[in-house]
Length: 260
Image (cartoon, rainbow, N blue to C red; front, side, top):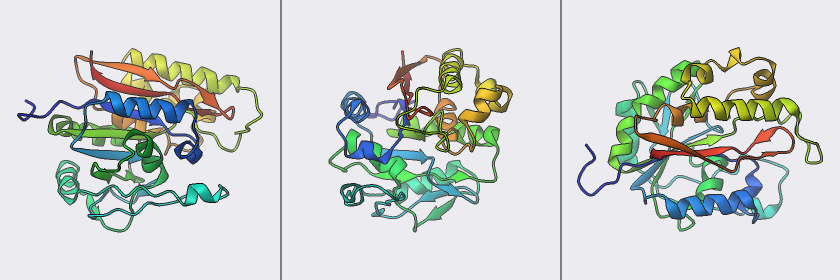
């Protein structure tokens, strides 16, 4: 039962794409702004970002997480961006209690998988934000199980946000390229599997053939989606947005999980 005065929170997966979405006015930045206005206001945010991989589970536990500019080759305007949201040692301890073996981290901060999205959703940076690292020792099924352990947070006013990309092959990315057929096929197939609640196929994506191999050369951008899907319950429905592929090989497909 949801504690009195709290709304059972939806779950969000965002295809974050280029960090330039933090400063450019485009369809994605506008979509994130719109989502932030539509969602119930959370007490706190827990983000699982593709850009923080850890040895064992880690969760940020500092009062004031730093803004990490974990990219290169972009204009100075992007490096000047700050997202001074408070942290939440209390939420960090709660997450550590839910995820066996999770360590409290006071060094990382908020990487661009987190702040580039939240800067649009909650520009005032006045909601506490915590990150949960992707444990390198886990296989996709293990990550899905960790995601399921976070379910009580939905009843406690916490917005769980997975930030990555369903299709993410930067080796083949080209701003001038036409869409790769395999990228379109895999993105659309994942969408259908999500709608059908075929979790087994999504977790064991290596059984989805050559398009999956090309779409997921490394899986750190795919795994945050599994955390979001692990929190889907009876009565929830999935609503997709930003269903587009950019640079030929990066899917921006995003979705909200929440009551029908």
